[in-house]
Length: 106
Image (cartoon, rainbow, N blue to C red; front, side, top):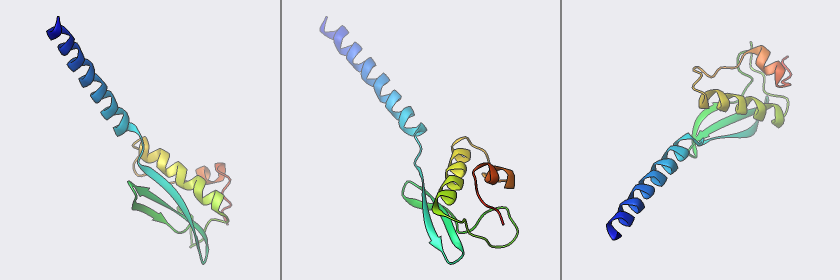
């Protein structure tokens, strides 16, 4: 009887351990922060607290234009994170996607 309980305890512990491992590996370690530049706003994506992508200007447009405000920069950064989490490589943004986010493109 004691042996059966010990085996069940071991099996349940292993299943819980695997469940936590897979849940933890699926949770994102990517974070978006915004910063101001001389030409507007930009965003940075960090992976486990380390800089991963630094985008000081609006991507995919001609010239060097920053985002008009922090909200636009953050929205673009979050879309890039979404693409990275869904394994869309490269996680580039199109002018159409930026417009859908409300980013003002000069």
